[in-house]
Length: 216
Image (tube, rainbow, N blue to C red; front, side, top):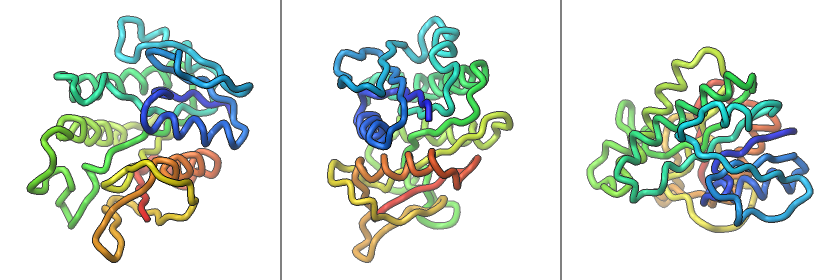
């Protein structure tokens, strides 16, 4: 497939890029700075600033793609406007995908909006780390907006509570809107296996206009 990957140089983006290329997909990697991207026959690098002053440039970068994967980071956790910039950035990505006529959007989501009990989300539990709150609230808002979207065929993949470096095992459980935990009460997935699940969804769509999650 012909994929545009936004945020290809980030923590999750790099794993998704490697998984997509290893499966033979053609990837246009969009990032603010593309210097660190690897050389690969199936990879085209394209510098673009999501949330910048030229939304038409992003639409141009997406044109002709079979799908867009968005792993957008609005400048890192230290960005004082992280929440607002993240929501605005994803708004621009959705608008650009529509303008470019891209049929599918897959979003690298967060775990904060997963439920630990009916009506109780991870983000709202006592002890949720303050340093992650702005980003988690922003991604919860992005999910809410996507659920009101009627044109794009979107999918939002929330990781387990702990998304860690590890191995590509290809063995994990899938779920819906509830946080998945193991027998010891832990919720964990490697970033490599997260990428496996995302590219699986790209190749064999099973969660059209839905959020899903995964964990060991």
